[in-house]
Amino acid sequence: MMAKRATVYFEEDIHKALRLKAAETDTNISQYVNNAVREALADDEEDLAAFRERADEPTRPFEEYLAELKQRGEL
Image (cartoon, rainbow, N blue to C red):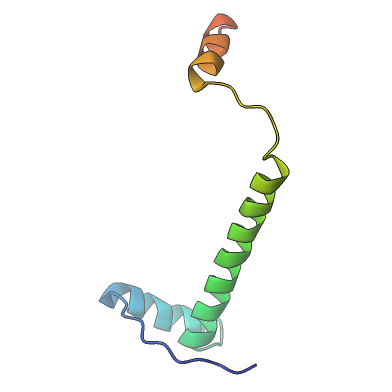
């Protein structure tokens, strides 16, 4: 896979932690950051899929839900 170069500025303490984590996991910072971004994007895709699946579900006001919880003694 072709890699694209990007300039990213990290806070000093985050950069230090990245260097240590990359060394600990026997990778380099680029590999570690790529993996982290890939995981974050996958999580986002799972969330978006869940939203799409539930898009047609009926909605109700939050206040109504709170009132039901109070009525049942759950709040």
